Length: 150
Image (cartoon, rainbow, N blue to C red; front, side, top):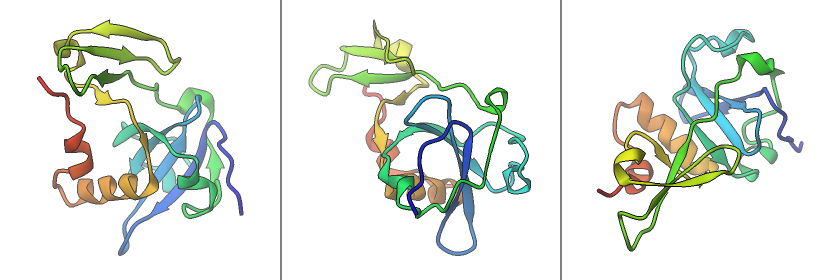
């Protein structure tokens, strides 16, 4: 069953063992917010806290049905904002820019990018591993490899 991106759509992300997480499709494709199993989404209610993280997601991460069908939809007012991300030239660490969800970019210093996540489109396997690492309270190797270089 093909799953289409729909703003506010909530998917259940199964993980090895008994753990689960929830993916919430945001107002702009391809951004998705991920929540832990204790954030209220299991009861078809808006999340009670902040997402674990928000990233752009490859369409095939959810479209093939591996995360199941859309369980329900949240209203637009219940969706978190899409954060800013950064890009950094791998050859010149001082060459950075900040990327808004709208696609607008602006030059920035590395210091301005501290605390932002690198702009990337994530695959299902990396998202699922990141959530597992979060639950296990350990660093995620993929995320660490994308850290800002100062």
